[in-house]
Length: 371
Image 1: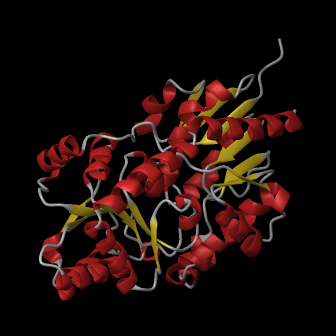
Image 2: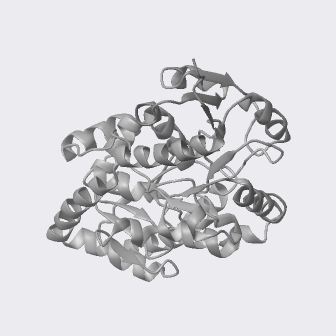
């Protein structure tokens, strides 16, 4: 009996959008990828979560971006016919076939990262090595594909675009029910705008905070701003900026919420706002739309591509423009309703089943080539 080829996935990334991508990939891949044995390399704390979706879980406590990971992952992948890394932190000295998902090249192009020590020494080197070693590169938007071609010198035919998709957890919820869930869990009773994501510099939160200050100066009643996501390095400076703008009382900082509550946070919001300068995809755009909530986002990077004309766009360098778009949401019930309906339709375009099938096709081709 011929042994099935082994696809090993590095499932150590669990944070932010990359973690969600990894979990969705592992959660549904076995149904789409027939004839292969599926392994995942995961932190011991996550082993049980993945065990029902794969043939074998290989515990690995080595953190991402670590020498320990570089030393241990190649051996743990063992006899795998293909190792897939859902992040550019590939094992540099791995000698067998691998593929990689490069979500974006933000560390190379955003001003807040590209001149940093980490970017010059670590991200730039690993991205170039990953692009060169991978048999195939998967990315999550046409924008990211163009940036990978431009900044890493990769041939177009080596890159496959597979759009992200919202988890099935995100779907419409009656606003009255959503607001009660948010009030009970987070103590938030006022109307609010919502930001979801790590508050790192490329997320461009100073523009959003300044826009909120402008909005407050011009309106008798201003919604609050709920920010879900944690970054201990950058949050203090943002809190100082909020204090200087006089809007500390409008802000609710929330480190983390489970998907059920996040769904309610989306559904109860006046709009989800993404002011980012750089996004490989911008998953909160589609999660928000899937919950029937309007989206206001920067006209930058992949965001317009993903929103597909179903959001309000603003200049990412202009707090004035951001403020104007937020005011439009507040001033027009009809516009909000139109955006809700258009967003629901747009979200259905991003199919998780179709994304899994496309991944499976690529992995099947690479496993066949490696046989």
